[in-house]
Each structure stands twice: as structure tokens, then as C-alpha cells.
Length: 112
Length: 113
View (tube, helix red, strand yellow):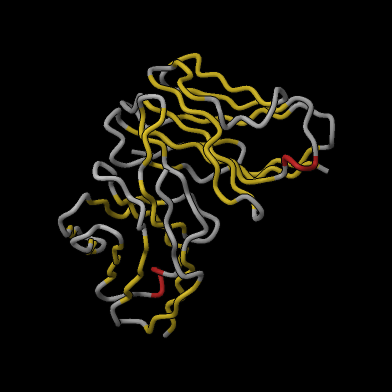
């Protein structure tokens, strides 16, 4: 199973872009990169996922390197409500369904 | 849509007592997941149901834990007897079979004294 490495914490000023890195050097060719976040006292929330191409949605952008060994989640204009723990997950296959294995994540603090 | 509904939101019980946590998935979702979150171990998958059938329960810690899904709109996670080390936040999540996105409930904070 591929594993991910994320910095334990990051800071960002409100209104600036937050760039959260993730290393997944042992990722397999058919494994996707998922990002979830967990705001304090809430359940995790899906953000975005991708295989090899860059992806963008209303919440964020996902940049995956060409060798797929790392990726970056970009929150283009961070707000105070984006303060959360962000999890980078490589989806592993188990018994016919895609299990999500959460690591320790990056604690992002957005300050005024 | 009300999202995934969990009850109770908070539960305080004494060691040895039976605890039942409840979950109502989003209507139309036929995959349901139970997770446990602690400071020490993070967020762990306990069990996964598809079409009301348990598919993978390898994360269930021991025989004191059991989960059921009697119909598509209801699931329970039972701990009997409960122990202090079971204190955690328990999350339920649901999704469509493609599982692009799992939708999590607000969680149940369990404290076993």
C-alpha cells in the first residue's frame, strides 16, 4: 500500500494562496490521490481527487507531478474557515472496494 | 438533503455498559462506513457495508464490537461491554458504489468512564 508524507503544520495569511504538499513516492500506476479535510469537531470532508492530470473544482486545485511521486493542494484564496487538518490519501484497493487510509495530515492555520 | 445523521452526538457511559451508536446514511447511498478517531491512532476504518452486507470488517478491534445494517437507511455500531479505551469519536460515512466521495456524519463522541 502506498503511503503519504505531509508536513505536520502550515500557516497561511487570509486571502493568500495555501499550498499544501504531499509526497507519495511509492504510488502505483492505478492509484488515485485524494484530499479530504477535517474542520475541528466535524467529520472529514472530501475536497478533490486526481490520477495524473491536474484537477480543479470550486474548492481547490490539485497539481500532480509528472512522475506522480508528489502533489500539491492549492486553496487559491484561503479564508479563516479553511483552518483545518488536510489529509492526502492514496486510495488502496481492498476486497473489491477502495479503502481510504487516513494519515496524520497537515494542520493548516489561516490567520487574519 | 440532511446529510449523514448520527445519534447520539455525545455519549457518556460507565465501563461494562452496552453502547449503541446509530447512523442514517444519505438516501440513495448503498455503501456505509464506520470509522473511529482517537488522538493516538487517528482515523481508522472499522467496517464497510455494501447493499446492507458487511464486506470488510477487518478493522473491528475485537469481539466486543459489532455492527449491523438491517436496511438501507439504518446502521448500528454496538460495543458490549464497553471499556475506557473505547473512548473516541465514531464517524459514519456513506457513498455511492463508485466511492468517488465519502460523505461523513458529524460523529458521536463516546466517553467510557
